Image 1 (cartoon, rainbow, N blue to C red):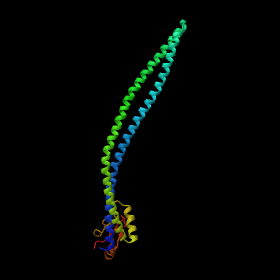
Image 2 (cartoon, helix red, strand yellow):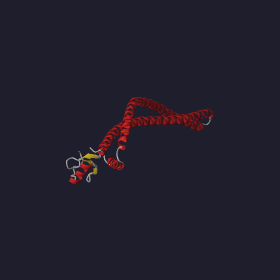
Image 3 (cartoon, one colour):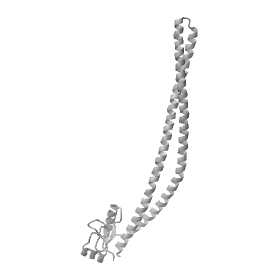
Image 4 (cartoon, one colour):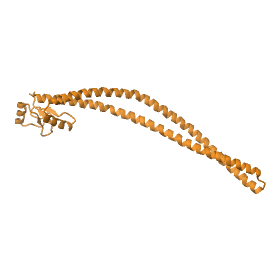
Length: 234
């Protein structure tokens, strides 16, 4: 077999091995993305729970401030009622006192409802925090395993790329450029032997004269039909 063919086949072997290693490396990425998606979803759920608590706490503070104001108003109304002497004024004062009492009762009831909701929401926050911590611990072990697998694949890939660089140096530049151009456009191999009178990739018949030249000179030709590189098996 011609040295150029041997060198090219060695290079193709390295490239196919590199492609397989890269596929294994890429195969680790979906699991990482899935873990990140789950982590992000848990974090967003926790953030929403915190937002709900913050909103209820704000409503609680505002309601507590209103209740304090209305209590002061109620106390003034009661004090005024004690000083009223005329019936008409007393009736109006009593109405104000009753109105303030009803308002206070409604607001205190609303405050109790907010307090109950806050208790539930804070419980939800604690549950979300626990869930996030558990998920992170679970993922920590798995992430370490994936990271270790990535390191192993990267080391293997570096070794193969170094070997590939050595193989590429043994090939004439124009042939290497032609090979790289064909390889970049394909998912499979770029170099095939003749199979009988035909291209080993697409089975297109190669003229006899051309086959004879390839066999005699060890030359590497491009298939006119599928574009791969062909060589004659000696």
